[in-house]
Image 1: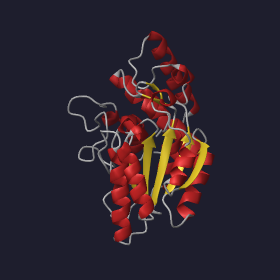
Image 2: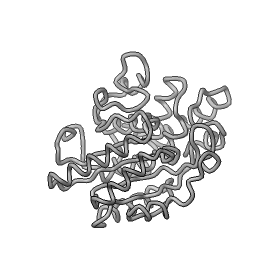
Image 3: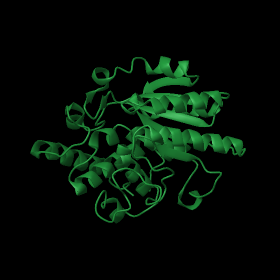
Length: 280
């Protein structure tokens, strides 16, 4: 069960993200680990949904637009009792219900299929717009990636959200400063995300993406704000929480070598020790 204490919840999500990727033997370590704190706050405190209410139209919605962060979402959904631990370790294997990128037709608790980058935020915006038209008092949360925002489709969605004053949409940007092929500033310099989101009509704040307290306060304020869609820029590190992976240059999709496995196993052992008595 996901702990109520947000720091503990983040440790749980990080541990099971590492364990499921270890079971697979490779995968998206970097971009999964950088959203752990955000997921712990969203699912640990703010998202009004559980296994029993997952089909209730009045629930809150969550879309992981950067679908390669799926392992962290799956770890979170496991801790929220959407499926069992044995299912978690079938990640991206034949016949699994946990494919590399989330699929709403396969995975319990997934509100939107997200494979091709740029499309998840458009879907999340549509969900928020539909819920507003229906008069529902709920929120739609969406995590987007900084590399993903190279896609023009994302900015079309943001402009649509602003035009329709979707105050029920909360976008969290995982600004880990890397994408598949290198640093975002070297591939397409994103410039100032805060200024850009404000220019697109969003109420915008930048916070430490490694701090559950900072993220929690930002979401509380976003939920209270009216008249505009909300953007929270998360200042994160790719591979967050595992120093060796943070410092690894090619940490987007990792096929670990011996040195990598040593660091991953040490991180797992450390987290297990810290979580004795509160794992699930």
